Length: 410
Ligand code: SF4
Ligand code: FES
Image (cartoon, rainbow, N blue to C red):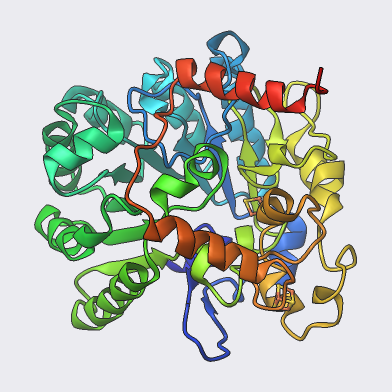
């Protein structure tokens, strides 16, 4: 993990040890002064369109329509404003950012604004000439997700035949062009045994960094929790393997890891702290303090179409809702860790307890913690089930089912 990646809290490492632990690496080196001025990282979700259909996706169930997406000029303005306010890194994501035909213009605008530009892609639609063009325009880094190392399983998880060879081709071009590569390994029940093979793959591809990212249960992943949660034993085995591999591969490969909150004793400082170092712009221009913040119904979000990015960062009501620690309830309010983990994740507290001000149930001090761990252990002990693929048809079904559960009984 680079210092910047550590600093923006985009990737965290959380221990599941039984002993009390500091638990988290990486978010404490953000200076308060810098945070007061600008977020370090901005996630630009250029679109929700995606050729893959992974059930672990953290996008919202209600996928944004193409007609509502920001225009080229609107995205370029976001890049310029981000550069002016002192953002350092831009993560171009989605959905699949490469489905935007104007990705070139957006990369140019980001690069001209002085932003370190990272493309987070599934890579299945990317052609060599296009990648060369993006690199010429200033693309600094590419992150490619592999749904598994085994091609058959990978293609089943992503719902996209032939994906693996395309990804391997693109990864090869990235390193040939001298661009730093991160292999992203989204880990869950259906591929957790492949963690050692992911390490071999990252080395073979010449990646600088491997991100072993256990699924975080937001959006589609929350809907598919039962199918995705691995057993406690497999989770621990994967963590032990990564810790050993990190030591062995020092100087060769950096391995970051995000473990499932459901087996943690202490929560991650989600986003490095709410509105502390990170902001997210949705395909339609809503500005969020984290990618899942729309799951908190009481929040209202500003839009880059009507308000400057800097104003939103400094004064937006959603950003100020959980900034700092004054909003906290007990046990966080009087806890020694409150300035370290910020009470964990607001969206997870909302999803599991119905109140975003509650302590994240990933914390052993939360009254909901046992319920969360028991849910995970119980689901993981059942025979594996299939998840619901992330696609517009299933989104419509899931939203209809949700509406029906909200209707008053006849
Ligand atoms: Fe963190 Fe709150 Fe748990 Fe304390 S009680 S460790 S601040 S989540
Ligand atoms: Fe929203 Fe953690 S995902 S605060």
